[in-house]
Length: 473
Image (tube, rainbow, N blue to C red; front, side, top):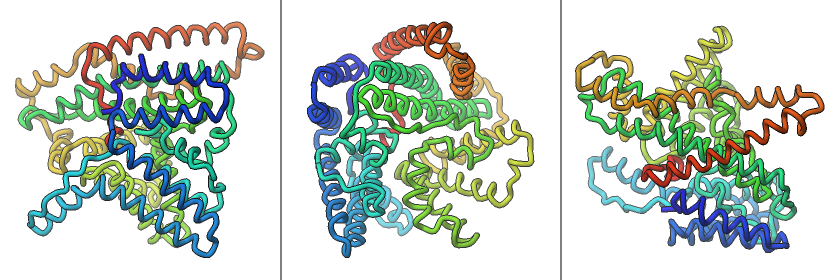
């Protein structure tokens, strides 16, 4: 397991950041970040840190070979893609493939039982994007292996994203500076992400776990919707919270990662949802799979096929289970429906948003379920579970604690684009952006951030429940 949250907050991060601040040269700072990142990963994955280093070596070498060998550059690219995807297939999908073969052919091939390295999907996709960009001449091949190792292993976004393209941070790796305002804003962003994770996601996750693990006899329409809504909030606040922490830490160390979420639950179509949800992954598949397949340039039938392929692999990327594949295809089907029957543009926005949330919520139920059977059962109970016996209602009421309800209210408010309105207010305060009222607001926000940090640490110290959903992807 990677550092516990308290170990990270109280020991690892303060020590690394203090050393980073006192080290004078950028080259030495990069060396510190490499050592810290490798230690961070090795603390939880002592063997698989070698796998990550091997990935960095392979992709560094292949990019150099592509840069040098104009005639054989396509061969080197294919070799690199095969090595990366082969590594991902062995460590992430071997058991899944064997289990599928056993079920289809009614045989009993032993499963390899390979442990999944944490964050392998993220650092593999980052490495692939770098090599492909070198092949496409969007970025020059990096001559320093250590810069590539830092890019692949950088601890803030190593194990749960966002997926960072090398071309977006290559300048920062070799030329960045420390800025007090950036550090302060980054720390505040980190704390906000921590609060989203510890207070909202963990609270919602407990309720979701109880519901999805409950005996079928206890699950009626009320229980099913409690579980569905709880998981809807858990996965958003878990992942967006981690993304906020990664982006905030990036600012503290002089890196600027792109936003990974833009209020996706306010989308009025599935197409719009995917422009706002896990943006780094959706853009990765668009740039490196959808467009190379032909995108929408080869006719309607090919466009449909390309989108289905993309969403099949989007689902599969999330995990070795058919529930994830069905989740991906579910979104792909509605995306195609909206493309060729654009009904979301013809109905009131409130109806379009309810429709989008309903599709997303149902999809996440399948995503969360342990099996297709469990997912179908839970979705069925969401619409047909009209059994209000004492056991079911008692179980439902056990989940609806005052703290859970308070965090769900906070979750609904937090999913609204409040930051956009704040930015509008800021822009309209003529001449007072950093003075007067706005300065007082900023001071208040920093004070509240400090209070939130202490509150999160207290919550973490008194609880052993702190799962990060995307760590296992």
